[in-house]
Amino acid sequence: MLRKAMIQDIKSIHKLLNKYSETGELLARPLSVLYDHTRDFWVFEEKKEIIGCCALQFCWEGLAEIRSLAVLKEHTKKGIGTLLVDRIIQEATVFEVPKLFTLTYRPSFFQRFDFNIIDRSELPIKIWADCIMCVKFPDCDEIAMVKNLTVNT
Image (cartoon, rainbow, N blue to C red; front, side):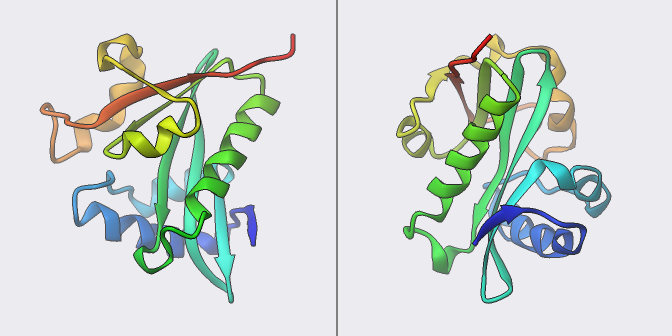
């Protein structure tokens, strides 16, 4: 079941994200930061277990990020990641965000949603605040991608 995250989900989200941060695929996020951003998250729950999550974070006027997309390895290739990203795109559209970006190691996944690879320098400096905490800073090897959304104005 796909639903908005609740406070009681944060420890499970933290555990899921840590599995991917241990392999260098995601940036680790402290529990306190996750609690601060509870409303950003959607989760996929099955049998009362959080098996997937994804967040929409607003960065600036007209720009938001898809971040913290993770699905338990044993549940990948079942369309859960697709459901999560579709929901984030829908939510961004509701908020009339004209541009959505992501930093990823899996560009082919996001290309299915019409994201295009861009040079990271095209993104505003403000979005790099989290990068200082990254073990790969300043040698980021993630791929920046952007999607322009149709906004009803």
